[in-house]
Length: 388
Image 1: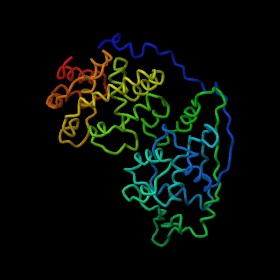
Image 2 (image 1 turned 90 degrees about the vertical axis):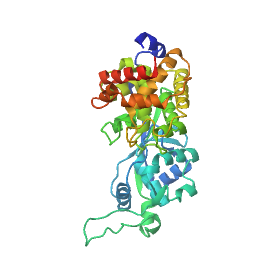
Image 3 (image 1 turned 30 degrees about the horizontal axis):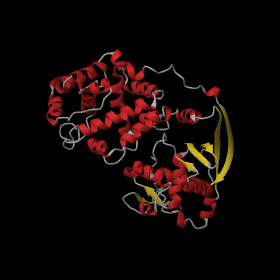
Image 4 (image 1 turned 180 degrees about the horizontal axis):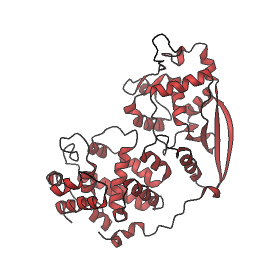
């Protein structure tokens, strides 16, 4: 497909319209809230974790160190929250610290494989329902893990939980944390400064994965659509992963496939740079076109509904093959996308097998997989298998 054929999707895009930080009128005010007040803010939903934030990723040892610091009165980094309205705040920086406090007081620590799902539950119920909180499939007991590494020396707080802090409990509850409350005064009607501030606070690389950073920097209706599609049962079945990925790798796979369908002609390596540029473009795309992307992806899922499990896995069935899936997705969807219609086709497993075993496809998938020449070769082979 030529550049002119895909032009319809981006034909109404303006030049870069991102606001510069000096165009904002922003106020910020420091406040000292004690631990229990912050816990109550989270419990009542006054403080929320916005969708562009990463999931909770700290392990129990790191969270325990924070709790110990608060008990002892050691300094901890300040928090940044964004004021959207009266008693309505979003966390800009400090989610890991706030949720560590929340889980410690609840005396339950989330299991790593359940955290993305728990994020959805938290948002849906404005907290964690008691039956989920007490479910050992989702949580373990939050007893402080503070080993010293010395046989003859034991940390006095090791193994303690919120209920067994005894005399230190009140000290912990009343420990103040510095919170910077940020509010955007102008321009009115958007919260774009929140993303700018988040990006700057996290630009030092707070161990964020590429898609976690991308999700914050290019937050948009399109990204909300990607997150919605990522939860679809049919998509989870194709991935073979019932649980959402804590580092948003599944979102990144979706993003990559859509980008290859919509804007491959603009591709220049690296893949990371291409996905960043595509995400930035999609911030300006209107809702109707994003909804079409959602619909065509759902129609592709329907087209795959009769395939056996792990149809898009590598030989041996041990991992999802991104190159295989995106090649089939693009070759099947491309003519429908160009015609602005939905997929009306059933994907044949025998054709997937033929593509998987094709020598040219295997060669283009073995090394330098993100080179444009190899992407073009894979797409060309896929088109020959699935038809123009």
